[in-house]
Length: 302
Ligand SMILES: [Fe+2]
Image 1 (tube, helix red, strand yellow):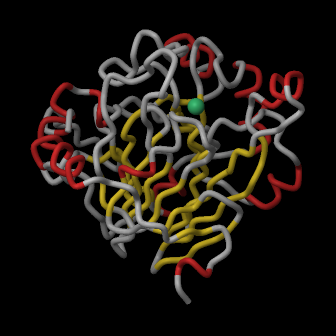
Image 2 (cartoon, rainbow, N blue to C red; image 1 turned 135 degrees about the horizontal axis):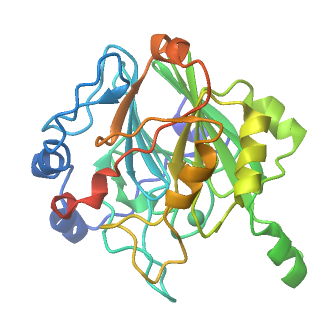
C-alpha cells in the first residue's frame, strides 16, 4: 500500500528549494560533535546517552530519542526508522520566537501536532517522508506512530472570538514495547475517549514553563495523574540559544522546584536517551528528565 493511501497520511514531497538545501545542508557531523562532545557523562545504567560525533544513531538497545529544542523530538529506532515531531520556524508576522533555524533532517516520518509556526515546519524534513497531520496510524518496520485528534489549549479564547476549535493531535510513538506520547499544545482537559485511545504511556513529552504559557502547574499535575507516565520530558520552554527574548515563554526552574515534591529529577548534559523495556522497568516512581536541547549551543547552527 502506498503511503498516500493510508488514512491521514500524505506522501507529499516537502517543499525545499535547492538553494535552501545548500544553505542548511544535511545533518552536519560538526553540529553534533560540538553539541555532544561536551558531555562525558557515563552514568551507569542511565538511559541518558553520551552523544557521538555522528549525531543521532540507532541503538540495538531501544529507540533513541533526541530532544532538538522547543517542542521538536527526533526518534531513531533499532530498525533505522526515523521520526521527527514538531519542527519549528519563526512566524511570518509578529515577534520572533527563535534565534535558530531548524536544520534539514532526513526522516521517514514527520508529524505536526497542529498548524502553528512553532510546530509545523515540515518543509525542513527531507527524504520524502510520510507527513502525518490527521488521525491515522502508520507502522514502519519496528515503529508505530499514531495520531489521536484532540483540541488545542487556546480553544477557550478561540471559542470566545470565533467559535472555532483548533485541532491538536496527540502523538503516540511505540517501538519495542516502549510508548512515548507527545502532547503538542493540547488543552488540559483531554477527553476520556482520547485518553483511552492513547492507552498506556511510558514517556510523556509535555509543554511546561514558568510563565504557564500552555498549562498551569496544577494542570501539569492533573495531566500527569490522568496519563500516569513513568517519565516526563519537559518541552516548549525558554531555551538559551534557541528561544528569542520576544517569545512568550518562561524557563522551567520554578516548575522543577514544584515538581520535585512528587518526582525524581534526573538531570543530564545530553540531548539523547535510549528507551528500552529494561529501562522502563527500572523506573519505580515518576521521573523528570530535563534533556539538554541539541540545537541550543552556538555550534548547533546549521
Ligand atoms: Fe506551541
